[in-house]
Amino acid sequence: MIKPSAAGDNGSTRGSKAFRCIVYAFVVLSALVAAGIVVWTVRTGHSSVERNIEAAQPYLALWRIFLFLVLIGAWRHWVELMAGWTGMNDDRIRYARSQRWRVGVWLILIELILIDGLPRAFFDAWIH
Image 1: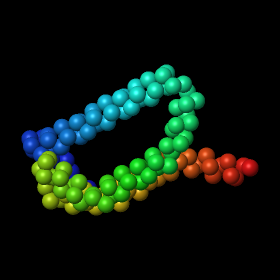
Image 2: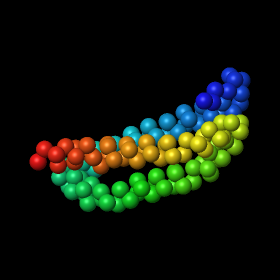
Image 3: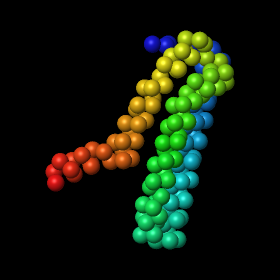
Image 4: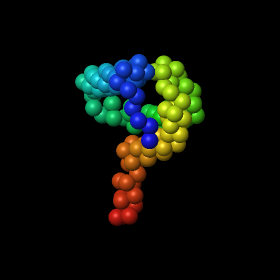
């Protein structure tokens, strides 16, 4: 396992800042999406929003698959980009590259369990 860099390492500090920026951007984007959905629901009514989201499900699934393919397919590029920006050493770069399929499998499992409701479908089929 790779140990964290020394506290004075500029790459470590830069990596921490990058992580915080990514988390903050995710939180802000999530809040904006949630606010947009609330405004949309108030303006058009709950049933209209529900119908539109149901109609958009196949397109949203394609979008998620596209994002997975971009993440997994360009993993080496993303690692090199982050390594150049944060100043990662060779051991960290090799370790980050080795995590490609672990991250990909976890994302697909999360997609199947949380988004697609695989356990619910399994138990519904098993009970009925």
